[in-house]
Amino acid sequence: MNDISEIKENKKKLTVKEKKKFLEELKEKYPVFKKAKPLKIGIFDELWAENPHFTRSELKQIMSFHVNSEKYIRKLVKKNHRYNLQDEKVEELSPEVKEKAIIRMEIIKKFQEEIEDKKKDKQKTAKDPEVDKAQEEKADKTDKAPSSGT
Image 1 (cartoon, rainbow, N blue to C red):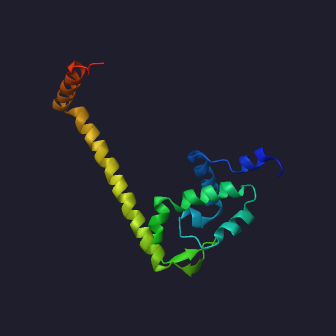
Image 2: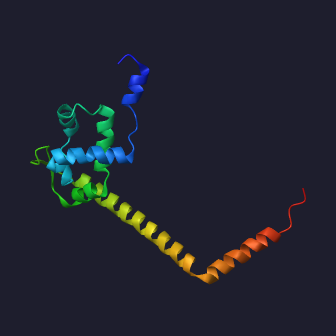
């Protein structure tokens, strides 16, 4: 790895599509990924050793994508243990991890509600001719406003 371009290529940022594709590969190989169960601490090195076709950077990105998914966070809230690659319970989840997961789920829920509200507002605006008329009148007033004397 003497070549800088080779190092940069190993640090290439994966697209969401690539992350999903690689994650599917892990889900097929390891049920613990498919079930989105909480992973044991230190599982990365074991996973990397068993999957040398991934660069370290790629595997970090795939893992980050997985553990930040809503499904995984939901399992952190529901489950009480962490699991190894063989889908066996290996350690208990700490109360702190569960508390953080609950907070993250609340944030996700709030974000989803905001998106839904924006969609509803957009649909309502598109269907309401009075809103369209008011927007047109406002635009007309802006167009007719005297320019600042330059």
